[in-house]
Amino acid sequence: MTPETETYRIAVIGAGGKMGMRVSDNLARTGHTVAYVENAPAGRRRTIDAGRELTEAPEAVADADIVVFAVPDLALQSVTGDLVPRMKAGSIALTLDPAAAYAGLLAGREDVVQAVAHPCHPSIFLQRTTPEEYADTFGGIAAPQDAIAAVESDDPAHRATVEATVRAIYAPVVDVHWVTVKQLAQLEPTLVETIACMVGDLLREALDEAVTTMGVPEAAARSILLGHTQVALANGLRGDNPFSDACLIAMDYGRESIVKEDWKKIFRDDELDKNLAKMLHLDKIER
Image 1: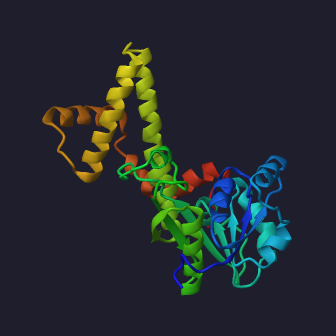
Image 2: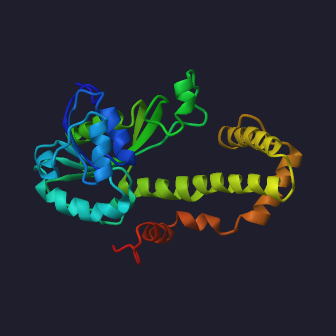
Image 3: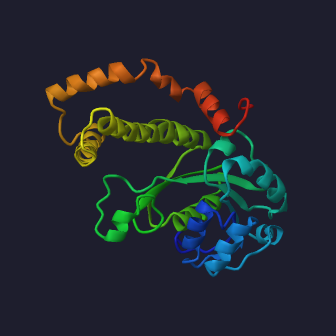
């Protein structure tokens, strides 16, 4: 059987949270046997309102092939510390962000495999054809996306279980790309949060400045920014069309005015550790 047709027993921890609801909604459409676990009253209500039965955590993880920990990074140390010892031998503990795994905060057992997976989100260059695909900018509903995964095992069966789960929780998925836990941490947060998300927020600030400081009508500023952002990404990331000579001069001025000369230091291991320590509210990452 392929990873998409094999079925497994899956437990979702934090099933009523923001990410947990996304994961649970998709798993409910599959043939997998799923146990939903949620402790927070509001999350329990959301799970029940969605028509799903709640299971107590010890029972849910005891016979699960894979346990999906859809809980915030800051809670993973305590939650895995409680539940990993209750998991069956040979099962997989899957977290949805690499920070805690890379920092060594997850509870481990020699006979339980650690894995991490994260969605790529639908590409800005995705050819969308339906209103539902256009509306799904996050992914996991209608717009296809890729996913990144890491599994600390050489057993093909473990990778198959992780891939089947990843394809289910982030569906529709085109490709699953395999990396190490460290590489996934280098991608998320460094490449996509520290850089891409920061640039996105900087664009919002720039739009606000054009409207409030320069006095440009908001509709005009927003329209030209959104269109040129697409051109900038297409030219910069795909080489669709060369930037004009005048644009290159303006780009150099922007780089000199805004970007620090040593900005690429964020890709160093010590800088990654500093970044993740801040995210996880730690003094430092222990090795």
